[in-house]
Image 1: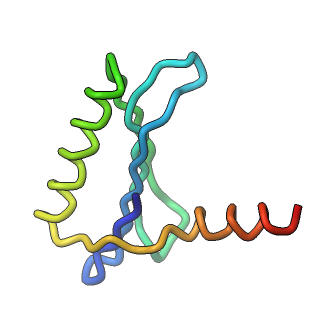
Image 2 (image 1 turned 30 degrees about the vertical axis):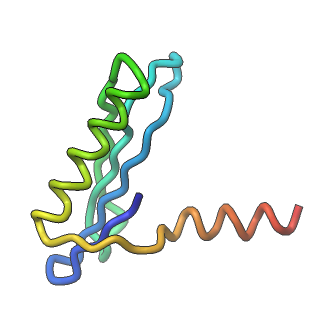
Length: 85
């Protein structure tokens, strides 16, 4: 999922994923829409249910902080690349 905060010009991306060791968790990325700077974080979870619960916490927090759901530019690019293969 991808959110934008229009006033602050910030973005926040979150998804359920596996890290390089195979650990399941929630991967988050956030930063400024104006620069390439940002941060990434991985929150490990014990199960898919726990990962879904953590994602719901993230969704609630983003809404409370004034972010709006938006089209993820990375997902858009990946879909375009998949069509050309």
